[in-house]
Length: 228
Ligand code: G3P
Ligand code: CA
Image 1 (cartoon, rainbow, N blue to C red):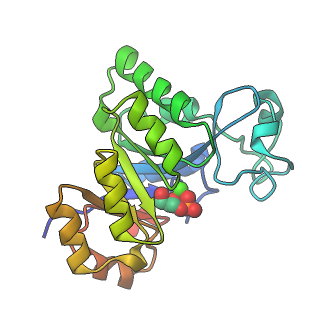
Image 2 (cartoon, rainbow, N blue to C red):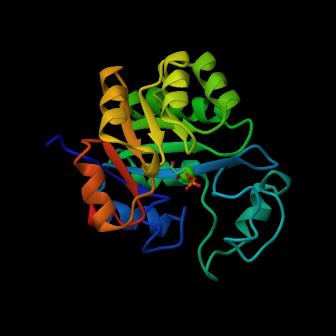
């Protein structure tokens, strides 16, 4: 059986608050192959690692990320003590210890993310293999492909593997990222035969992990990296 890459969802969300430096450190402690995270852009233009469009669910503040400046975001706390990280801070923590799956969650994130990746490749000896950029949003994927076709793309879907494959061809993606409930042994093989990796999410139950592994997917995104 092929090796299944172990990718920590929002770090190690099953153990630490999602999308925080402690969560990414925990994932590294589990020796993950990659980490997944979500990005939005804030009012002052910095890339912020947070899942939702607002800070309400995960921090002690309220409001849309796009309406808050970096200094305002930095006054907020997650679980009373943890700051909301920027993408740059996460990259500094992770170094090149594993690859980073950057999900473009917010609008207008493709351009700044491509610049940040290019800067890390030019100035810090990263390679394109250290990153995969995924999104559900066609406009962001299209923008990323137009700006820099060398950046590895992953097509997220919770609707249809076939539609993901169509977009994957359009944007010369490296991978499709389907929800695990969409997978069959046949469609995983079809995707791979067409030249795409299959990174699936978010699988936390051991029984599901073992079943999906038999389909020989390329990677599993999980809140519990120790279970892969
Ligand atoms: O990238 C896989 C997964 O993270 C997509 O869903 O809601 O957890 O961002 P969500
Ligand atoms: Ca995500």
